[in-house]
Length: 139
Image 1 (cartoon, one colour):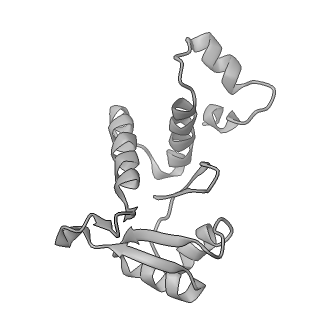
Image 2: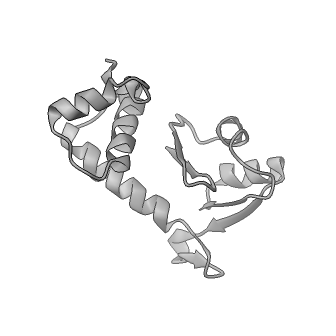
């Protein structure tokens, strides 16, 4: 899974079946400004993608115990989000990959609503006039 947060705080998620430089380019190039700095783990595909795209890259070598570079570059937020998402999705005892985007949409919706809704309010919100979260209702 690939998680990108833009300058306005909007989070984008993509499901990559394989982490390759071309898959990263397909997902990231439309979202990134030219002056972006990519901070990632040391996976070779990120290095190749950054080099081929002309993007600055700060790889974090977690296996060597490095967590932060220059007191600014880290992957802790991504790791925390990943842990939160895995903890939430565990209750479903496995999710088919073809439906993973639906579960991600559901989780994103839950994260964006601070107050708890009863089932009727939830359905009204999900099937509301703007259909922003219509994907949650598809099976």
